[in-house]
Length: 309
Image (tube, rainbow, N blue to C red; front, top):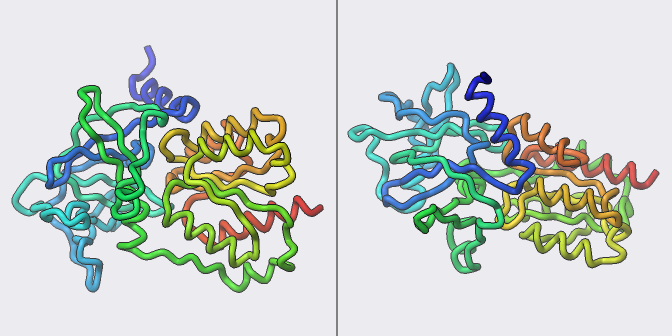
């Protein structure tokens, strides 16, 4: 009989091919339910007795914990969102140790609840007012029809830790001229801060682009545009998106004759190496982790250089 852990790992790996996400549902100090993709989680641990303070850190960074011999910053999500701070010194609390953009962070929470699986088609984007004014990126529901809020943790981390979107002079010197590509780059990402950061890189490379916050919308445009294969020199796409995820979007592209030869670069905060394997399995031409402007710029320059030959 196979080890149950291996069976579970195999089942989870199949989520990449079925437009589904498994999420950990957890609570903060407001007792509401929140969700995070399990592919970003390394481990969920009880908050240790000692959190070492960091001088001049953001006020929601409680300090660092020792995790497997490494110092990992710990962020109080409740406090960041304007709720009462987590009283981790007096009450049992937990830390979600997760990986975003090749960095490991600890997210301080009240309580982990359960694991549930949902189709991305059942995960909805919030209305514009909610998404523009806060940190809510998507909404899902339990079997009992209770709301689960999926937070834009990328946006939170950008505000807490900062984000450098400048391409180095060394990389910019590789761009021969503004005529590097006469076609557009198509960008798909539901996170507004992520789109702005990627657009900044494209602007620095003197490239034109079209942006979509929904893979569902982008695939419809591509399938209905008879000249799409000549209009776009490459596609840069996020993975985690309500409606249709980047893996499913890539499979759709690669099964559509008119656009299947277009270079698809998956660009995700899910920086674990296993996601690169999944990207290759669904037919993506490349995968890089967010957000490293020089690495992104080099990849774009390389792809465009190949197109010109």
